[in-house]
Amino acid sequence: MNMEKIAQLQEIIDGSENIVFFGGAGVSTESGIPDFRSQDGLYHMKYKYPPETIISHSFFVSRPEEFYRFYKDKMLALDAQPNEAHLKLASLEQAGRVKAVVTQNIDGLHQKAGSKEVLELHGSVLRNYCTRCGEFYDAAYVKNAEGVPKCTKCGGTVKPDVVLYEEGLDNQIMSKSISYISNADVLIIGGTSLVVYPAAGLIDYFRGRKLVLINKGATARDAGADLIITDPIGEVFSQIEVR
Ligand code: CNA
Image (cartoon, rainbow, N blue to C red):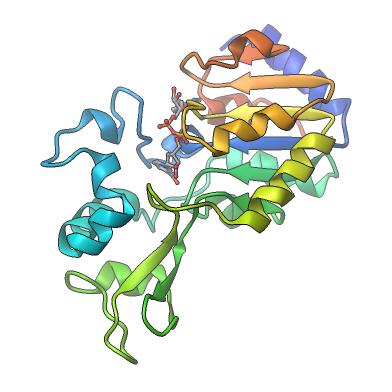
């Protein structure tokens, strides 16, 4: 681990009370949830269809059985626990340094770690609704259902409150995220390849003092960053003191 860079990160964190964290799947790989684009990510495994096809709206509608086989197997990790990145971000929020976590993740681990202001750009596997009558179902119901989960009230198909490919993002969550990012003093981007739009475009709204990137792989935003750390994000945050 590059301790000189950790010291720089600590200094940046200590010097701000308006930090926003923008993250992606890489934040949860140390919790045992595979991301999409790493070597051992879902895009490198072999399926009958590419993951972006399976987790698309049209596929969900036309082949719900296959959608749910993949989804339950690869995307519903209900036993996963927050790692040091989630936990430290929650402590930093409590200490008045982090104002919000804007995440592309759908695993609910930031909230599980104790973060309060979490903007879930792509929804959450923890919320599921009947596509016909709107009845709510938790993730355990979906996980335990045989095949496609059906509504006990009306028999409709239950759908995760997750933004699938071909679906739009929630406008209110987008504008709140823009507001946090455009008013932030420090933006820490972590565990994201920054290739999924419109989420990745939110970075353009940042006009604060320091931009930090904590990502194993290179991203298109490296050139504009004040500090780049390529060590695993959980290990990085385990070194950070909250004060
Ligand atoms: P991605 O495209 O898979 O990129 C992940 C990035 O994180 C890569 O650049 C990796 O190099 C990097 N990375 C992986 N592990 C670590 C680590 N321990 N420390 C630092 N960097 C690491 O994922 P994005 O989030 O950019 O793509 C957006 C998609 C992925 C969103 O729509 C998510 O919903 C979706 N996704 C979410 C989850 C989850 O909720 N945990 C899991 C898999 C995919």
